Length: 183
Image (cartoon, rainbow, N blue to C red; front, side, top):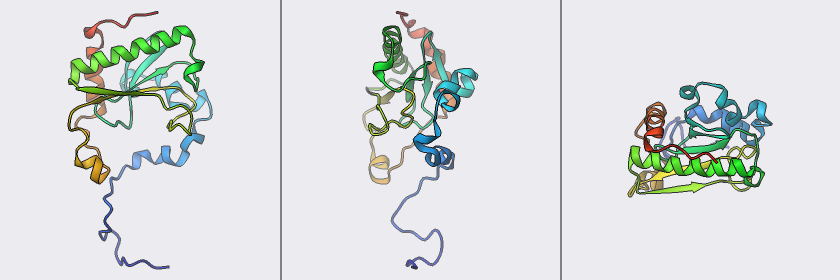
């Protein structure tokens, strides 16, 4: 079967955002993370904060920038333990997980002045979790107008800072906004 296009790149009403760095994730999907030995949330704490985009390390959980952010400053709170479900956390992990989420919001308010947040955990592959085997909570800063025509019409987000720049700002402001209370 042959289509109506003779040359590659001929306009076809689709805008394309080339993101070849996501190919490894797309090709592997949920099956690429088979346990703690190849889980990015388990491996990240073993690297430097800058390399892993970690902004804060707690005793039982840590905070990291999302590698594929919805907005600048999109953070993830992750337990160190490789557990898939919120109900798998101990009482101590739950308390630190919540305290880190609150502190992340304080820090983002100080650094970027968002007017709102989306917080959420997608549980299981069917629930929309990109990596279902390791629990993580999204903290997405929001601003009025951040849902402009690009994401709505073109399905494209404009991210205005590099991940490294955002990590430096958030990590640098972490202690200045008040220490996270340990359980």
